[in-house]
Image (cartoon, rainbow, N blue to C red; front, side):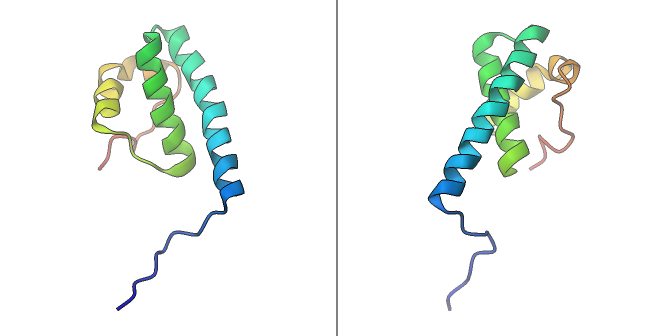
Length: 88
């Protein structure tokens, strides 16, 4: 039996556009996190996770989740907290 995916098919152009948008907002999120005192390398991973969550509804990896928990007060202060970000 063949099962069809419920995901809409994206063209290569759509995928590139989506990735460019994720990168664009990720940079903005990274700058907000840096301003709040998150170390640059950790801010990069957190910003990428939140941007991917916002655009593609992709949940963060275990490493990213650990960073999000660790820096949650600063993420809140940067106004980047997403209530369902850490749900599985």
